[in-house]
Length: 322
Image (cartoon, rainbow, N blue to C red; front, side, top):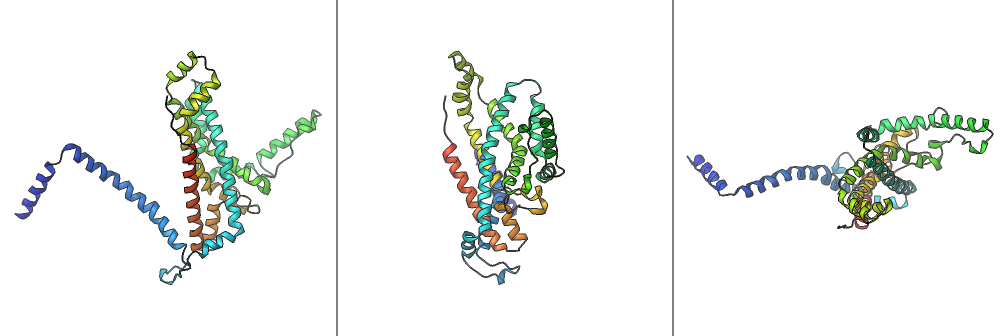
């Protein structure tokens, strides 16, 4: 009897809520599900990593010893970490602007053609859909000093020009991944090639969102192609560019798959010239089983990404009104 009475009271209480209030409650309920997932998958492991970086590692948590910030002090004097940090920043400095410029240029070209646009868009986007490990393995073979298709082409190219009596146009075979001065740019070129299609699709979406009336009004006022690009396209693409810069920077700072697989017998080499922070953390955690030290590297990488992202948002974001 009491159960039926309680059910009747709850039904009466629900009936006092308006339709808008019930929709609002359900909206918060559905928002809470991904929020709980995010907290459990992202925030909680991050807090666990910070806690782990303050202790020596042992499988039994009861036997771990608190050492404070010793691992962070060790990072400051570790030359391999310094090299990994420098390489990671170099990757970011090379990859982000080149991807941005090429992605925008190709998107503008695709925007100007009417026929076969979906075909070209699919061609450019297909490398992005390919697993990074497979891409790195293929490019590793292409970069091979003795068997790579790139050096084979350079040899044929040199023979062609030497036979024509123009040896100064010949280009000798390159060491690529075996030379510390060429290894990092070679890996960066692979990352740029693979992620270029994503940038093209993002910029195409941004270009299609710009009203045609702005261009038509500017042309009536006598604006040329450069003026249209500078005063209409670039300002109205600013939100897309900010998104592109942030996503590319985060991916570059977390670079791992391509570096590991492109030179599997010398990961991060030669002479640590391609070593990244993510790979350095992996080697310390699963190569030397220094979980606490690797957790400290993870915390530093998290802070680096956070600072770079905030600075980029501050510098690149701006409001445009027409």
